[in-house]
Amino acid sequence: MAWESGGNDNASLVANLVRNQLIRSKDVAEAMLKTDRGWYCIREKGRKSDDSAYEDAPQPIGWGATISAPHMHAMCLELIRDCIHPGSHILDVGSGSGYLVSSLARLLIQTSGGSLEEAKKAGGHVYGIEHIQQLVDQSQLNVNEDSKELNDILTIQQGDGRVGYESGAPFDVIHVGAAADIIPEPLIQQLKVGGKLVIPVGPQTFSGQELLLIRKKEDGKIEKTTITGVRYVPLTTQQAQLAAY
Image: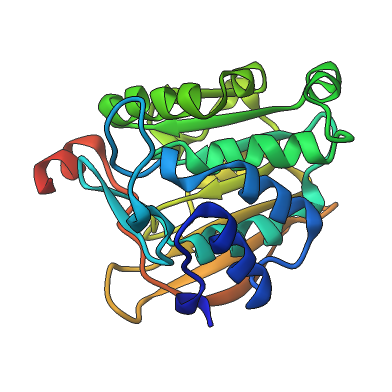
């Protein structure tokens, strides 16, 4: 069902994700409905992307990066939504186009009574970290053309996401959008007790990666659950990514 969820616009895409039970909650549906994927795929300034943005497939966004397929975004948002509440701090590693950062910001608003002002008042914030400066610049443009108001509760900046973002820690939720060989220890350290980390782990082969859901327990130990097999671009250095581009 996952690859059969595409549509010809954002509303039909989300409707198909709901129909195929990839979106199961009202909050995730609202967040993805309000975050039009057409602003986050390759496009001309001031205009949304063409219909290809709404295919249920990953899309290249330049500099060796991709925006994940919509069904993967839906799956990850559903996995972590119970850890998002007023005041949550959220980190998206490898934030790419900025799509998931914006979706997470809207999910934070949804859980704050649907009010941006309430989300701000509670102190919640979403941090995106991306090591390619050109992608940081493009993702900020995408957010601005989608909804400038989201900048009140989100920040996207250049940096090495493998070391997390100490200034925003501890995090209720950490999402990683590229596959690591091993789980970076700083991300475990920066995860709040009771928080969730979603990360693809494994080599870049057709069957070698797994999407892991990690929860930090009260005693500080981590509980790992394998969700599904996946195929993501590697979580690597800036130099290696640009060299391969």
